[in-house]
Image: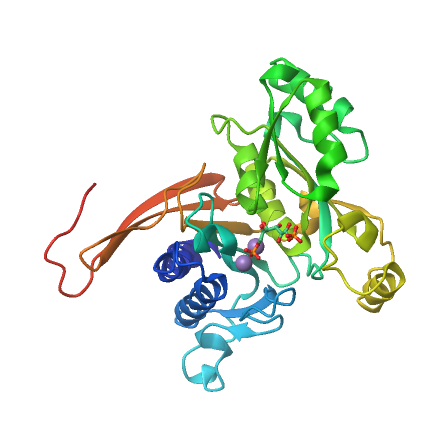
Amino acid sequence: MENTLGLEIIEVVEQAAIASARWMGKGEKNTADQVAVEAMRERMNKIYMRGRIVIGEGERDDAPMLYIGEEVGICSREDAKDFCNPDELVEIDIAVDPCEGTNLVAYGQPGSMAVLAISQKGGLFAAPDFYMKKLAAPPAAKGKVDINKSATENLKILSECLDRSIEELVVVVMKRERHNDLIKEIRDAGARVQLISDGDVGAAVSCGFAGTNIHCLMGIGAAPEGVISAAAMRAMGGHFQGQLIYDPEVVKTGLIGESKQANIERLNSMNITDIDKVYDAHELASGETVLFAACGITSGNLMQGVRFFHGGARTQSLVISNQSKTARFVDTIHMSGDSKVVQLH
Ligand SMILES: O=C(COP(=O)(O)O)[C@@H](O)[C@H](O)[C@H](O)[C@H](O)COP(=O)(O)O
Ligand SMILES: [Mn+2]
Ligand SMILES: [Mn+2]
């Protein structure tokens, strides 16, 4: 699966990032999102595959979505039998966030990306559009930190695993009212907090790499983003745990359904009966092959954002594969038809 898809999915995230980056700093988050969705869909539909979107986006804010259940790829077309041999066909599931950090793009802030995760059919947890409590940490702390432990305990464990003092640790937390106590606890324990307004996929994946100066992600973000983050961490051997949050009182933003009871019923109707289950990366991204691909829209810890020149653009992407055990950074110059200049820097 990886060999045939690897290069093409880079182009999928590249095209989404380029489209969205044209709206960087324009204050129009829905447009930045919509153009990314359209570019991602258009490029995915040119791939020789039968793909199904298991995680799309847009339910929360009526954004234009690659909708859940949407079939993508040449081999999903009605006339697919003319091009695709069913015996050779691999059916894949895809989780997408064409513009992760729409606010970041709209306001020209760092850390936005076009991102997706791919696995065999059934290989990605079809997370509902709920919130998720998350804990991400470097490979050295995998299975040692635990979302059921307090932040203070986890920081002690992390400090031992990474062989550095708690004061030398940086924990990313989304700046939300719901995290006020968590932030205080982390600071009281001696660690430093990096507050982000949006974009917890980038923060989670940053924990997987030494040298990003991010050692942990704690707190509550969205569940779909949790699955995409888990795919990356599964592929690179980092720690990721997620627990669905269904009580609006905990989330505080109010964007989580009408009531706790209604949310529980919704989860049950989706066959999620163990509603407090803590999922690890292998459960959220359980397929034999897991691929994660992202392309920077605005620059962040992991990737540079899109840089335009005379109609062309330069992008930086990251593809992580559990099969080849690679984290591949891809730097691409996209030349427009009549480029007079192919800009190197
Ligand atoms: O920041 C985020 C926004 O994602 P997007 O809508 O694709 O631009 C995500 O990274 C967060 O995980 C999540 O969506 C957020 O925490 C949920 O929103 P909020 O209610 O503002 O906390
Ligand atoms: Mn997102
Ligand atoms: Mn998004």
